[in-house]
Length: 394
Ligand SMILES: Cc1cc2nc3c(=O)[nH]c(=O)nc-3n(C[C@H](O)[C@H](O)[C@H](O)COP(=O)(O)OP(=O)(O)OC[C@H]3O[C@@H](n4cnc5c(N)ncnc54)[C@H](O)[C@@H]3O)c2cc1C
Picture 1 (cartoon, rainbow, N blue to C red):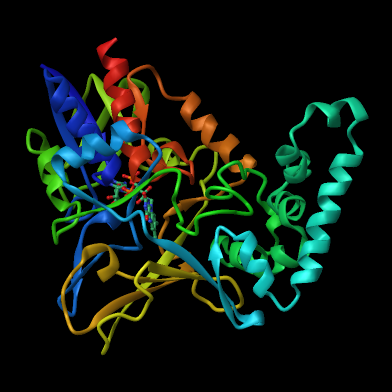
Picture 2: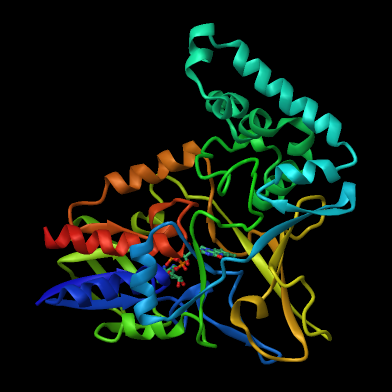
């Protein structure tokens, strides 16, 4: 049997162990620093209410990934759910992605419309009569300068203008990333989630699948099923890495593997020789409230786009369908206490690449920290694991 080491037992590590088990012929060891698998996706309980560390609902444009997970952890579709954003300066909740129809409810709606019109006209003015003639009316009225943007701030100013940017994006993004200015963000292809200015249905995800496990313990059964054939070392850290030789020291013992699947920050595998990769994290505050529900039926969580210290409030019963006369919400506060979100800076991605370039064949990078990419969600961790299996097969 060939040997595989999986570093990290979050969703990506578990999914990788699972794909190797499905492939067959692999003796898999999973090393996880925490005393449990799943990391932030594991279900916890507070006041009798199940919850995860942040919403962690299953969002995917990939039907095959949905079908795959659904086989092991039956999922309930939550296609009805909307994202709301509170804009304190208007004392209003609006939809997110920003919905065109909400502009009518804004006290400065005319200013917003003027700015959107000016953006559009400026782009149309750059086209020749012949180019305009070839375009459909729909395409023409949607034109903006986003493709010329050099940073996240410019991207949003080109898409939606100054007023909407200040209401929805400016403060939110700076507190989300704990940065001074959104000009620091120069890797922004992940944004926005969906479209910058939405029309039509108000549901958050009308072009992708939105779902959550039916079981009260959420995704936890998957972590068990995925690692059933593996040796799982919990509360364990690798003491020494020699990645070029696929050799590590675990509990004082030197071990060499045929392959390594890594889901932790790549700088850790090389003693941070090119410098540390930065991340931002989250503190999560669970609060039980003496009402059955606090949010409207189709609202599962709200963003707070202004100067509030928190970014999001999630009402977990909406996902879990837990029955109780009380409800549980969590407040998410950006923090440097843990490392959850790789920074969307090209310079840091270039640093991460230096580490990836040091990895020989047979070392696979999966998951959010493992690939140092913010836009890796639960579905992508499964996709990464499937890719590893496909490469091994071929
Ligand atoms: C607050 C928040 C909310 C989110 N909400 C959603 C959502 O609604 N929907 C969605 O699809 N995605 C969501 N995501 C993203 C998604 O959950 C993650 O991308 C995914 O779970 C990442 O899995 P992973 O295995 O790559 O990383 P992690 O979950 O971080 O797992 C890495 C594991 O490695 C372990 N580890 C770290 N260092 C070491 C070490 N030195 N030795 C051994 N083990 C180590 C950690 O303990 C951890 O268990 C959210 C993320 C966050 C932070």
